[in-house]
Amino acid sequence: MNSISNNQQKKGFIPVMLTPFTDGGKIDYDQLTLLTEFYLNAGAAGLFANCLSSEMFELTADERLQIIKHVVKVTGGSVPVVATGTFGGPIGSQADFVNQVHDTGVQAVIAITSLLANADESDDVFNSRADELLELTPDVPLGFYECPVPYKRILSAGQLQHFASTGRVIYHKDTSLDINQIKAKIAVAQGSNLGLYDAYMVHAVESLKAGSAGLSCIQGNYFPELIVWLCDNYNNPSMQEQVDKVQQFFIDNMDVMHDVYPTVAKYYLQQRGVEISTFTRRKVGNFSSAIRQNIKSLYQKYSQLQNEYGIQPVV
Image (tube, rainbow, N blue to C red; front, side, top):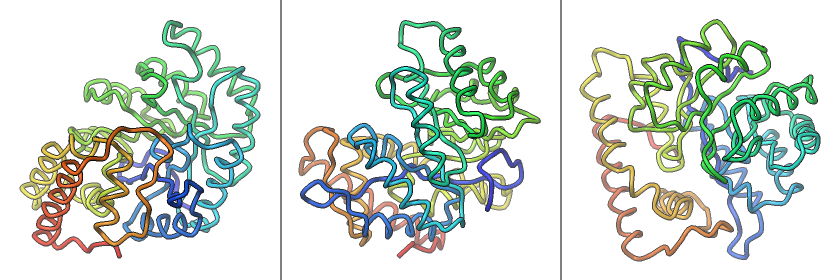
């Protein structure tokens, strides 16, 4: 099995997985199988199960574990899987669930930065609790996710350097939206086995060139094969014009892909022929006819780009 840790040669796309529900709100495991295979067929280098895109806060603890187990089973070891394991409360309780998630067969368990310390608590408090979590999960490779819910807590380069030096933290999903911070984090992680995956597609190419391990973004729930294409071609001098055009495509269409997400992503996948209900447990706002039209327009734009570059669509 490949590793999610840093690899300067080959960049990887790690989808933040959606959770398919029935129209009645139950988890649709048959469609989860097909969706997992959809990501794999697109060329994903790994999978991030049980994340914000998965509506993890709207799942029970048992549902979280069952979804992770299902994804691990479907991948069959073909790619690594990471999954969230911290949901607030005493560090001891969080550690217990981290161990349960690790037992499902994931390569790393992800800690939500904003659930290890409150917004008004210092970096020292965060560091102390994260160190405690490491002590209580001695056999578990960990990662950090700067999830925007319940609030966004960004780690500094100095903090990441400390955790990378332990050899235990191998994954970092960055949502700082700041290319300079990303470059600083990549620099301090050099020589460690930590891989930084950027969530912000506005500076995706610059991030990849700076040394990030890859991309982990919601856009992969629209056109995963395009993210894979970018990871493969971002530094190809003969394709610089195409790369620039793809980068601009992401910039130009950023807002429409975030509006009432993840409902819109599920609707987009329906346009592609993926059998998935638009049902979401998370309350994201009104899925209006105007938003539907924007998504149909996005589908047309991407279809043109796909045809122009000869990118094989995932069926």
